[in-house]
Length: 288
Image (tube, rainbow, N blue to C red; front, side, top):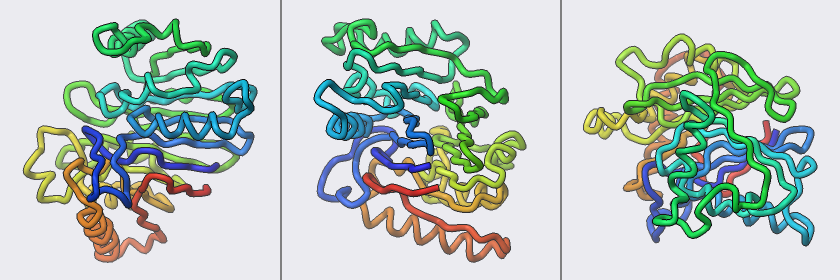
């Protein structure tokens, strides 16, 4: 699998001279499977650049990957995870097929949430039905594996605010990628279900919004610190952890320090685990 980062911030986009190296767009990650299929993890503002890249590599009649089929996995529907959805160009190409999976009590409720941000007061397209692509929407049942374009996908809910956020595990051809953004663990850390989801992952993309000091300062926000991210990776015996979803106020220099702190945390744990600690940045591509 080929994993590319298009947006790595949390809460709100943070463009400017202090965020050039890691980027200022909000959460969006793409996975290209071994069979050429496309899975998109969250649709923050980074989704716009992903869409432009997909159109650029396609034919003149529009984006085509896997016969025009792709899937979008939404961890939750806070703005920083869906605000790029209306600006994701491949959704406007007739013939493309997108299946959207996300958290809600029903598929109809999830569709209503996405429609809501496209109301005429907010966006001129006004409705999903005007977008051009065929779009299916399905609410996810946690703990029950389901097929997405030939991959096995499993979701577990992590605590985050009042509604929680889904962590996804994608298994394809013996390789595994886990995406765990917006994880506001309690004092005991991740649940046993979350640890099982992370278990042995080749790549764990984990919420690392804060330093431990800022995490303690904003406990009600339901977001993880870099120390919690590394600890979760060790407990799940992951092979590589990618720090992700940085606070919008952190500069590139702040993130350099955050990554260094994560690596020191690992060194001090004496886990005996061969674990790489990587900092997510816009444009970074990792092979799994």
